[in-house]
Amino acid sequence: VGVIMSEYSIADPAAWDYLRPILAENGGWAMFIYTPRGKNHGKMLYDAALKNPRWFSSLLTVDDTYNADGSHIILPEHIQEERESGMSEEKIQQEFYCSWDAGMEGAFYTNELKQAELEGRIGDYPHDPGKRCQTWWDIGFRDATSIYITQRGDDGKPIIIDYLEGRNKSLDTWIRDLRALPYDFEEHWGPHDLENHDWTTGKTRREFAAMLGLNFDIVPKLSVADGIDATRAMIRVARFNKPKVEGALVGLASYRREYDEKTKLFRDNPLHDWASHPADAMRYLSVGWQDYGPSTGGKKGTPSQRFKVKRALRR
Image (cartoon, rainbow, N blue to C red; front, side, top):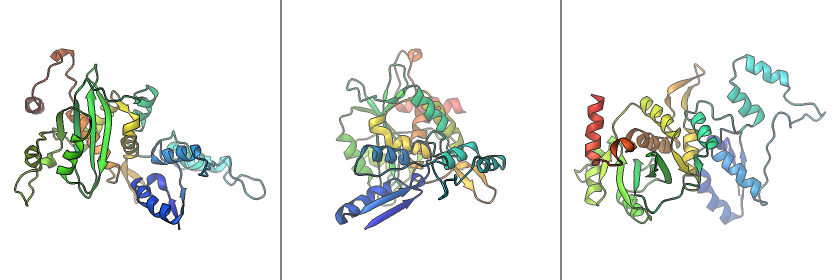
């Protein structure tokens, strides 16, 4: 039994996890054919294959591919013609030169993530047992629930120490799983969806969570565009514990605009796919975060007090 995954770098990476057990049971094989889309799960798979002697890996650019007579299949003048006809440099580097550094065309956070990597803010930032933690939720059931776990750095900026994601898990199961982690939680933040009522209980999701001992605060509601701007600003200062949050980083790198096939232009609104969930949770973190820096003497009010202050500032 074999599986061929075409354009794997733009597929939901969870697909491979569902297929692995089938192939393991049948002694099967898998083949992945794709061009890069930034440093996302396609890059992770390629790097893993390079390190595993049981895998074959090959990366061939236009400089490495030839016709039977020894001539290049695609000549430099062909690429220049594409460039002059309007093909973006990102797409050229991606499709002709298999560049991992070009970034996914239409992606929102390519530059910010590159900056974070260059500045060393993506690396080993493990849990500090002496500090309390916060959670930031994008909730779903058939769609994935995504949760960031943060701690406050000495500069007041967030250190993202862990990331959880899963489908078809109820709220009470998530709460149980959080309590099993070795973290001391002080705050839990989520979207306005938590105020929706469940018709089976008549209670909001927020009220149901409170019954189970987890008290949510609601992140101020901003437009998606404003939230994306806030996320860009947050990625420029946050630190990421890569061993635990690599899946979230892949999602942030893959979060991109919708593409209009008729106009051949990117729309302003984001594409809703698997990458939306880690990106939405990061957006809530970015909108809801407060530094509690020297101006406050390191002190903070209750979550409800902070929410009232934010609402007052928006009026």
